[in-house]
Length: 105
Image (cartoon, rainbow, N blue to C red; front, top):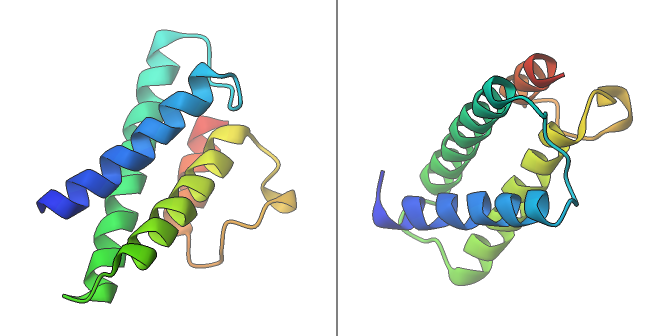
């Protein structure tokens, strides 16, 4: 993973931790479930960041980085928020998100 990909992934993960710490997003209470969710979300974030960087190629301007961070963060929050998949718009190409969501629920 490149420095920029690590930076973007860490920015998203830190925003999620902040949301959890401020009780904006609830997480499971037992340690095993939290560890499982954490691994799934981290894998999801890294995958989405790598996809975005591949799509952008060498031209990845700051504005696009910021919008990528926001987009991936919002999708990760949806995964953490709960089982109402029908009421959420996580995208039709997001097979991993649906699978992770089912495992989290």
